[in-house]
Length: 240
Image (cartoon, rainbow, N blue to C red; front, top):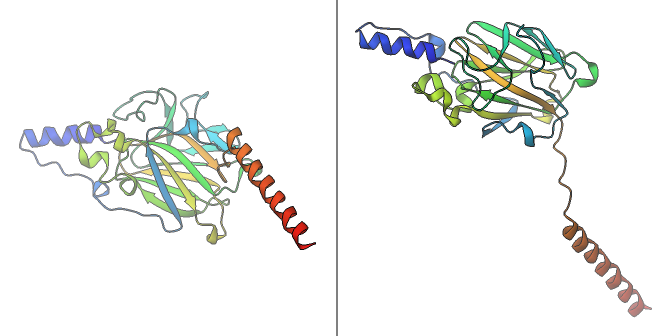
């Protein structure tokens, strides 16, 4: 989250000092090429049926973390609340992952039974244009990537002010890999060229379960089948 950078920029304008912004904070957009991205405002984890979820809870603040067959490594930090210019995803009171400027963090399957998914979702907080999410295959190679401003343009760092707390920039993002690639998702890589990439509740899954029909629907379905059987019997009698 670029709150500190924005404060410095405002201070510079007020004093007549020109403050340059990093090239990475421009409007350059990276779009996915091998899958589709959808998003919804706020954390939707509670209504998502996942095969494996990593919520970053129940651990210390170090960069290493293992949960549900997935391991976190790299330069990420587990934290709670707003810390040193970074902001928790909107409404998130639990521990989340923050990747500061110039650092990367990787979350990938450490258990072979937890590898090879069609889709992945995460709650992405205070989305900045310079946040970059990369999708990894089961061998840890990058399949696809997309930037924060692809999900929510132009990015909270560009909008400035209190944009980091705007629901527009706090989205539950889902990436689905095109099955024609013949590949499977094995992990994620988070990168940010400035502070910071904040996220929580990563869910890897294959296919959402079909909804269970309501009792009334089942009754109507049964009645319809019964009617078809009766009609078939009548036709056979007439033929005879």
